Length: 487
Image 1 (cartoon, helix red, strand yellow):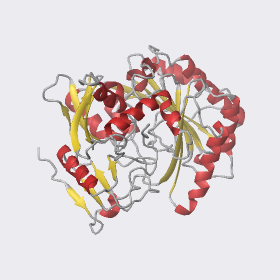
Image 2 (tube, helix red, strand yellow; image 1 turned 180 degrees about the vertical axis):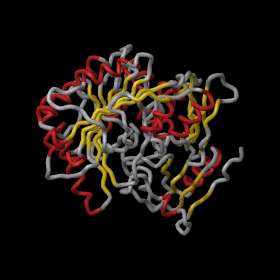
Image 3 (cartoon, one colour; image 1 turned 45 degrees about the horizontal axis):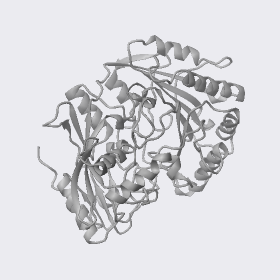
Image 4 (cartoon, one colour; image 1 turned 90 degrees about the horizontal axis):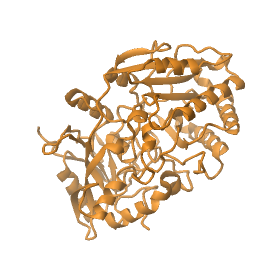
């Protein structure tokens, strides 16, 4: 296989206007150039050149960073890994698989499935870069059954810059010879991207077998028929079910649900469900449980967030797992967006349900692309100790993503105000501070508005991440607005 020879894209290049933008159209940079790399050695050279010329480095895999951590590079260099798309079995290792740093999730799913019958429990947006997804923890519709992506990470190949400002390629794992190397590997198990170096290869071991069959179903409720009592019943039922059925070893671990609480302008609230396993009757039982007293569910007719419409699934559809994954696999159009997150250990208190109703049902803000997505969580995710990886949230039952999308820059403040005031009303100025009911925020849904992001993302693991930063990136070459700080 021929390796892409690399390409330096300067401002007068026709590719430059496209390569300075993120998927989120709010973020447009003015780098001195973009270096598109096809191998680790090309990345090594690009890093060394940037260090020698005192240029700020940012790194792009898929370009989906929610905040301006990648494209927001003015006068520096964006190192683009998108030509590094190999997914293959490592030559000298049994049952070890390599994913190169420029892969997208769909790259990974299709190759692992078609060539090896394997998968990993990653996300449902096909064009998201695997690298950023992995290094922040990585979860998806198989995570209740199989845990987080990082729970299968075996080693990483990293380009870092040493004390002498020399770029070097190293490979570290949990079995590395020194404690510092082992801690660097640990930091890549959820410590977030852009912190310690550039990962050019991810190695996975003992990956789960890909499911043969999956069942998809949706339940939708018309906003025009919704009232606060019905809304409360829906959220109470969802939270109660997940509280009861999110323990390690739960028979419902093969069931993953996504409750899309849309803003009323969308027309429908939608519950999307996937089940993999040999007891599809559990999906029927869950759907029966989620039926509401005074409002029948109907077929989904509107898209929600970045997911496709799942047609004809108001009764469960049986299909090959890869086909089901493709059915859900959306990223949505390139738009402007803002996002926030929260982990929940307990179901919603009434005060938060009241807030959600107020912000989602109001006719003073009408945006059919605004919502809170409440993902089921727990089960095998929570089988891992909070300090075993850099992801400390290992006791939650739900994971929330607040989202709003728009296209006109003139509407920025309107949409930002809605999501910011919504979040403030839900959690107060401290955010979803870990208190036994809430458990902080997800680093892969970064939010620059968080005052105490260090603790909300990493909790007690942050101090150890700081030590790793000082050891392996002593000159803070790799940095952004929420990168790990030296002690």
